[in-house]
Length: 132
Image (tube, rainbow, N blue to C red; front, side, top):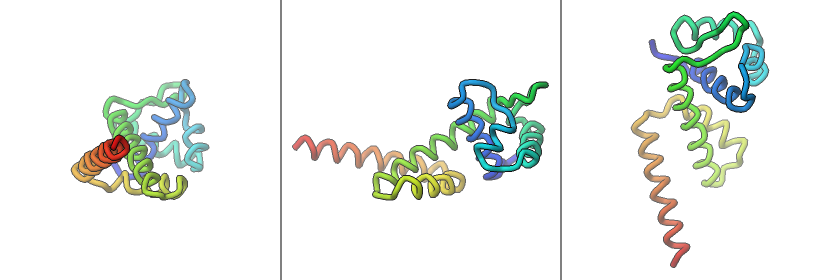
């Protein structure tokens, strides 16, 4: 099943919270982080669990499945790379992170990979011109 943007955002949020908190993540943590209602998050977790992206234990701790983790890492990587690239272009941090959050869900893998290659090439060009 193809995951929608909201599902990708939930998975990325679970990954971020797991790393930040270094402890179990619960629906309340996700709700507070995303500024969503707890019932909305609970419903989303139910759907993500049914579709095989997360596990929820008896105490309500949420963990990513292998599939969920792969998607979360992809979204997180896209978000951080795109945010950085936009800030390097002079976009303020708030706008860059907001725009990256939207772009990360619609950009194709091919385009994203080409952007990363172009970004690396421009970094090399800057470094070599600094050495001159």
